[in-house]
Length: 102
Image (cartoon, rainbow, N blue to C red; front, side, top):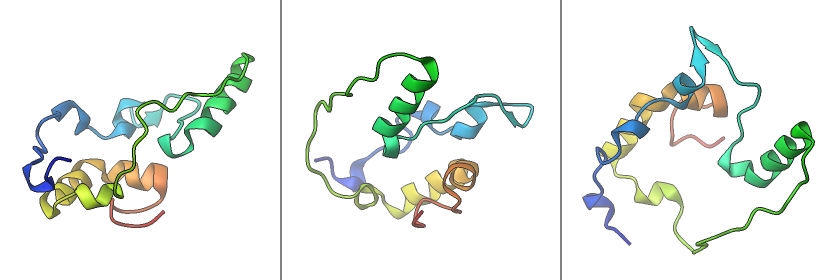
């Protein structure tokens, strides 16, 4: 596992854009549904049903045990994520920042 102190928070600048901005136009959400990774199977089944296609089981590839994701964040990383994703936390999770429980 990579030492959390050595993770480069600037490695993927394209991911530092709020998700809400990616699915909005002129301040309005322009998609009918936003699935969440936390509910991947349930949300996938919902989409299959809406599209009237057969529901299949999603394979779980590269499964491994790991610590809670917050254990990998430094204080600097938490501040950075909170600065660009606050809108996402409020819109999708009804919380103010990454450290709050849903």
